[in-house]
Length: 101
Image 1 (cartoon, rainbow, N blue to C red):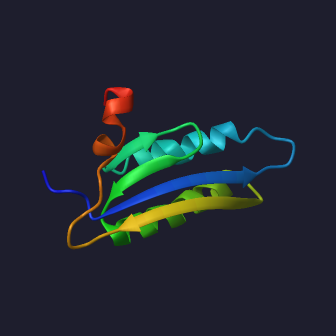
Image 2 (image 1 turned 180 degrees about the horizontal axis):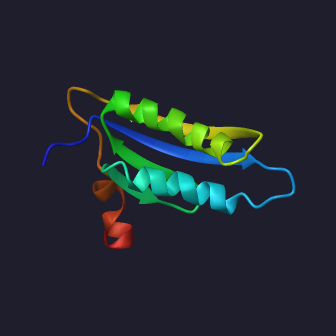
């Protein structure tokens, strides 16, 4: 199995006035799961693996979802690794021994 060329870990923190951010974060996670890419939801961030350009678009869309859902602003904390020639460690390789994935 070929390794994905890039991996993105993203945490979004929407700012809402007197509201609950969880429904907005749930919409972002639903979007990520709907991309068809490998996705791992963790307690602080969600990791997605795939094509570098697509992951950059996904990071942008996550923030736009927050704004469309009513956030006045959003902070996004992003970690990304990219290796087009050799690929990066897959989510499975990173967590399977710890989570039985």
